[in-house]
Length: 309
Image 1 (spheres, helix red, strand yellow):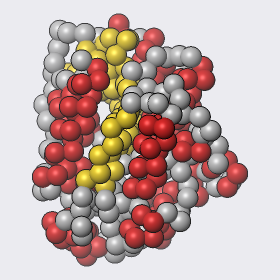
Image 2 (spheres, rainbow, N blue to C red):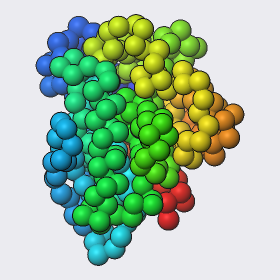
Image 3 (cartoon, one colour):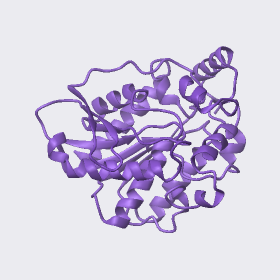
Image 4 (cartoon, rainbow, N blue to C red):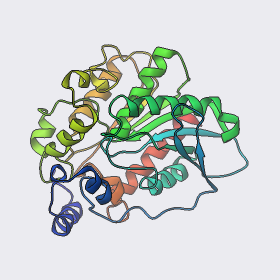
């Protein structure tokens, strides 16, 4: 189906406000704008029982923000990695999404301020994602969470990091991860898929924009083939935690997310796959104005509840 009319209006308004494509911006300009486009108001920040900023004692130290939807109870935990092509995005920008997901799931959410490129290129973000997940498991008591019910999840580049963490945890046999939530994830660097050809321009995130992100994160093409950069290229996905994979119909990343879900299923990993029709890459950030964005957040919360509670 065609892109949702409301989303089309929001993208047109964003184009009117700032017509510059991402690839024409400096890193500083892209960070100031918040990413590929600034298409809609962010989610309204929802109240939660507790928000706590912590610095891990890893090397290097990593800032994290803990959201607890209710107090006085040992909760499951989602370690969450924000999107932004490994170059933009932050804990602050993803704050409304993390609050909404904590409330929808009943899980504590630990949002990770991993290092960004180009100041810190691949594999810095992946290393931070794994280190923060391991730290969370080791400090579960301090965080008030159950170490046997820890999930990892992320959006876009953060979905890439979540998938990579499961590969790292399998290799190192720690920490135990009960579930993975992959929201419009980057899983490969193949720009020739049908979804790139169909959705590579005009839908917010573009082929040129993704090329710009990859060029900053992993400029060496040989490194992009490594499974910790492109998890779809991992030779074996068996033994990974159950997964919930979310894609959007009008997203250039749709096909690689779908392919990763299929690979997980082929490897015997229990996996649910949901593609939201008429939606674009950042559609959940438009949830105040696009009902399907709110539906997707609630669906992801339900998937976490089923898996962890």
